[in-house]
Length: 438
Ligand code: UGA
Image 1 (tube, protein in one colour):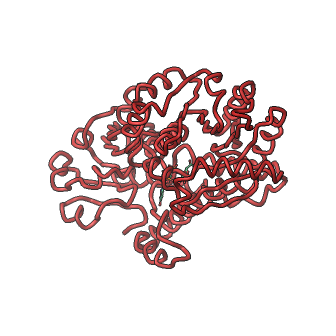
Image 2: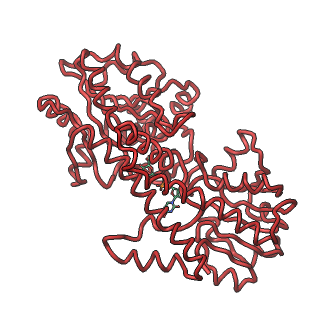
Image 3: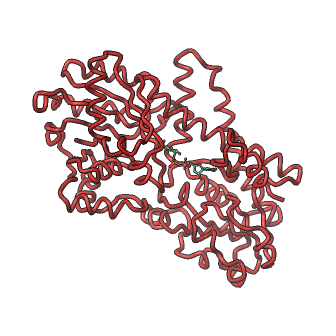
């Protein structure tokens, strides 16, 4: 099989498929990335991925190429390219998906007498799969949509042990049956472990993905709205989340209030979903997602407001330690990172900002950061007027407040992820500020 696009999704999918015993070729236009991956080195930080990649490359099951002709013998082609937000609107940019299909088209002949299958994994607006199916029809190739639900930081685990597998198949029964048979072979190991399989049509499969991300984003913004109410009333949003989470119908997960969601998925997916609804003539249907987005942005503003208030009303000339740059822990991904955005806003108000992040710090420095990037919490916090914990890395959650106070005598911490024990920090002499916590 081939995996077209070797970014986060594609590279992890390729290595995981190889680990299931398949022979996999990763295809990408980025020569440098292909060289790096071919040498068994991961171009991004993801726990467990380096080892898996090296193991599969060394075993000879996993190779990478920039030449589409190299994948002509593959029976399955997974599409794992990015669908970022367009630069001039909310819609998804399908340039890379279109290019992936264009590159494959000349190489889509029968393999061992059978039509090859294209299996889309990228997150796309509903209707995309049908359009691709029509494009590839003259070659005889089949199409399925097989969305991916992996989380960064848990990407390998989520790929080999997903919560569910979704097949979006053609309405043509023969095409659907053949596509399903091929996917069943690909995922035989997972299906044997009774991982739930949902078999449906293209549109539903495409929608499952964006609906899941929209629901997750809504949960986060819901609890963040509660954090505003909690701040105004002296209530504690973490206790509120715990209490409502005991209700199975609500559940505890994704109810962590804080500086909000970021990354390469949730923000752009809810916007693309709204844009697609508009194209379908359903402008009003998803307007609540606009509010989800607005609440999310407001958390960033509120965090900066809280930091400014904590240092006496003006951030200019203040020294601010920022712990965390990645959009979440165990990742070096800074796409739409709330941590980085807040750091920038604070710096724009004239503060001296020192940033540290266990994985994203090196990336930030390599790309020529506008911030002072340092290697340790102690360096960042040295004589800081305020410490902002913005990405809840384990290293930060385990900071000893007694020790840190020795380098930061102003002893003021804003816990943007409600990741610390307020009592422990206050007992150590710190002014502790949480999000929606008294
Ligand atoms: C998300 C989805 O969770 C995956 O299922 C999906 O496959 C992926 O997008 C995708 O579309 O490819 P990911 O972007 O890796 O995964 O990150 P999440 O774990 O969803 O976290 C997103 C953001 O929400 C992070 O910034 C995180 O800090 C924030 N978050 C999460 C909260 O603020 N509160 C929470 O309770 C949970």
